[in-house]
Image 1 (cartoon, rainbow, N blue to C red):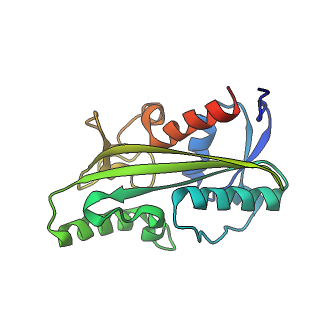
Image 2: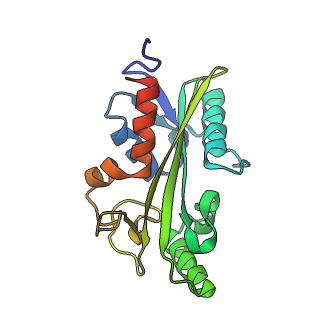
Length: 200
């Protein structure tokens, strides 16, 4: 089967989050030229789907149609067992309009304490979608399980990384070297599936 995405292709990363754009570039092994939707001034679509996969597809298709280029989008979030899977697809919204994840992490801790539960298990999900302008799309999903810690630890990564310790490790994503996180994260697992589908 021929490569669907030859190296050197320019891709639009459908994100306005500089941390996420940087992580996408690293995970793609530098094989593509990446432009971010934020840098191109593309508007952010309303995320109206009820799943990570649905929202990733919606964002990729939106960026592909607006830019006329192949677009890649990620929809990811933290799901907490004690909160019946919340914040889930609303993970970014819990950070408010200013995208203040310190506020979002405090809200997670507060909500768990309100439940009275001792369960600190949680999981990160990443759905990745690639869409061609007016054409086909491919979507995959990766999940990593772990435990929450409060207060958060580490200043690396972004989002909820400082409170999440992946299974089999004693450091939070916020404490890990980026290369270590990129080897085991939900996004890395999704990328492995995407590479198998489109590059290998």
